[in-house]
Length: 286
Ligand code: SF4
Ligand code: SF4
Image 1 (spheres, rainbow, N blue to C red):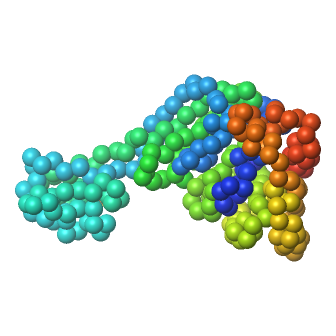
Image 2: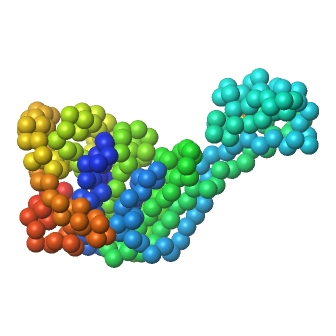
Image 3: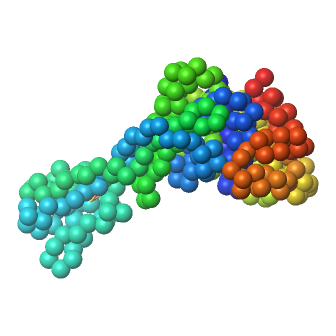
């Protein structure tokens, strides 16, 4: 079973809740799909056992010895990545989209396309099984493709080690990386919070997840910080026939557990918040 935990926006406490689900599951493959700003792996502290380069794209490089400054590449680059510095052609690597056009039209074959290989896919062992995580190098693209690779690796590890549950900690937002996280999963948990932006992002996230025809479970985290908006979220979910499986109060021990590098289940197993998370988890897996 694959369970994705997403939130639409950052700061809802999604990764804390994901780590609690992982502790409750016992033995899992955990996947940190937030390849731009991984957090879960910091908390779970896996011992790395392997890594792989991820080619996130290509960028153009000019061989000055071959270039005779005809200017054709500057004229045809649609991304304004090529320009002039004095009499020489220069390239802005950040603006280069790696489309290969300049390398194909250069009459002097002076442009090479160089793979961007600073991004990585990692895997390892941690106290609740196996973990897969990644790091997209700053400014690089194709996070969705890297997430697909993480998920393939996770499935391979689940099969090799007879682990039945894969829990994915999704990135914020509703774009390509989230789509890569939820495609093909069995269940999606959406963690929201009682703020105006939290409610708006929840609605947009539900709209996206519904396109995948997958079971959706809603959690309102820190619900007691604004009971009026929490009530509005409940009403909206009821109108949409969505299950709200948890109303978790604000609890400082969630923060303390993160600081201690533990899930709340490990940190205070008998606290009310841990019991509420346990009840929600049982609703998800049954
Ligand atoms: S097209 Fe080739 S030869 Fe012409 S300016 Fe560009 S790199 Fe130089
Ligand atoms: S690869 Fe494409 S985007 Fe990059 S410099 Fe060449 S034409 Fe421009």
